[in-house]
Image (cartoon, rainbow over all chains, first blue to last red; front, side):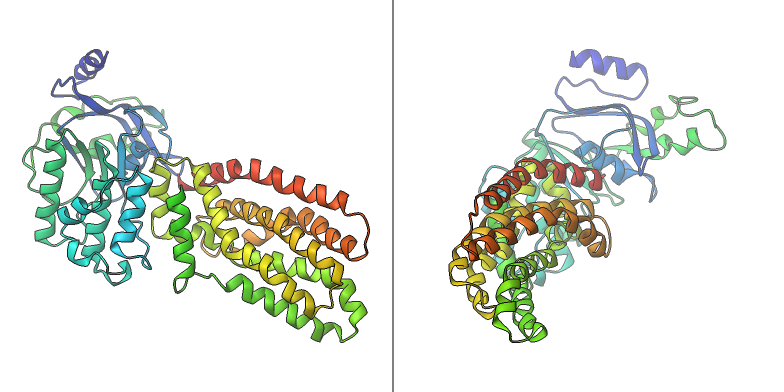
Length: 241
Length: 218
C-alpha cells in the first residue's frame, strides 16, 4: 500500500526516492493561516533516517506547515500520513517555565511523554552543569538547548522543528546537528524549517517558494487553485545542503 | 496528567505564582464590608451569606486569566496540545490546580471570615459545605472563559463578562444554602441544586473548554 502511494507521488515528479520505510508523508497539501491558504499542492515524504529541510522566505508559511503537520491545525486540503503518536513538535517558543529549574522543566515533559530518564538528554545537550539552575537565569541559547533536550525525552521518531537553531552559538549548532544525526541513526526522522547550514550533508532541501498559494490564488489566476501546478516541484528536490 | 497538576501547583507556590492572590482579595472584601455597611450585627448577619459568596466568586475571577494565558505566552500550550495528554485532561488538571490554589484556601479560611460578618453559629457548617461544593464549579467554568480568551491580549474584561453570567446559578444556590442553614430551615433543595450544577459543570464544561483551546491554537 505504501509502495503504491510513493509510486503515485513519483509520477507527479515530487518524490525522488522509493523507501518502504516512509513514516511521514503529505499528499497534495494545502495549509492555511487564518483561513487564507498560504501553501498549496505540497507533497513530500520522509522515511526513517531522513531529514527534510524546508526553505523559503519569511512569511511564506513554513511555521503554518509545521503546525499543520504537528496536528495543531487542520489542513485545508490534502492529507498527512503519520502513525499515531509519532510526532514531537518544537516551536519557536520553548515552553519553559522560568520559575522551575532545568531538571524540573525537563522532568515534566519526560513524565508527560511516559517517563523516560532525563540524564542522557541533559548530557547530550550539554546541560548537566546547569541542571539545578532556574530556567529564568539561563541565556537564550541555553534555553533553546533545554527546549531541544525536550525532544530527546519524548522518544518520538519524527521531529518537527521550527527554526531549531535560533540563538544557538556555532558550538551548539554542531551539537544539535550531532543530536539530529544520532536520532536519524536510531531510525528517527526530522522535518525542519531553518535558514542556516546545519552541516547535515544527507539532508534534502524542499524550497517552499514554488508552492506559494498566492501564485495560484492571486490576481493572475482568479479562478482558484489547481491551475498550473505540477511544473514547479521537480527542481526543488534533490538539492543538498 | 498528574505531572501537569504537580507542575502547576509548584508554579503557583513559587514567587509570582499568585497562590495567595484570591485569599488576600477575599480577606479585603470581607473586612471592608462591615466598615461600609455599619456595625449593626443583625444586618451583617443577614447579608453575610451573600457577601461571603460574592467575595469567593470575585476572588476566583481574579486569577482566571492566568489559567491558560501564561502557558500560551511561553509556548507550553502548543506543546501540551501536541503531547500525549487529551486536551480535556489538560483542562481538567488546570481547573483542579486552580481550585487547589484558589478555591480550597477560601473553603478553609471562610469560617474565620464568617466571624467578621456576625454569621449565625449554626451556619458555619453550611458555609464550608456550600463553598466546598460550589467553588469547583467556579474553577471549571473559569477554564471555559479562559479558553475562549486565551489568544487575546488584555482579555480579562471579556473573560469576566463571559464568565459572570455562568456563575450566577452557583451564587444563588450557594448563598441560599447558607441562608437557610442559618435560619434552621431545610437545606435540601439548594444543596441538591448546588451539587447538581457542580456535577454537570465538571462533566460537560471540560469538553467545551478543550474545543475552545483547539480553535484558539489554530
